Image (cartoon, rainbow, N blue to C red; front, side, top):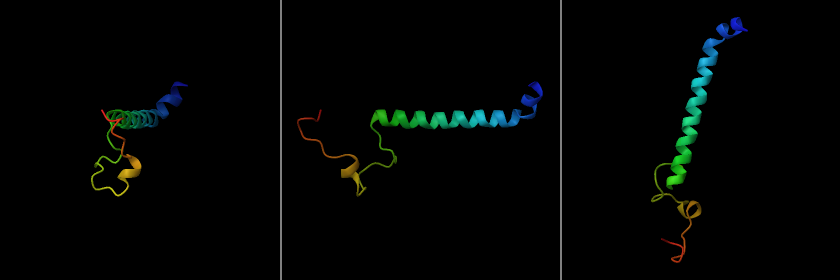
Length: 63
């Protein structure tokens, strides 16, 4: 078992780093969604599909 770990140590370390990077990316996306940011990161002012992603809400629901 120890021999196997030593032979594959580089693979284990690289895999752990990649898992941490993916987890950090997912956490960043979730934080952005909670803050109301768009997924593309460039805003919706010039986007032709902005009405589909973020439809206009009636005045009674706006705060």
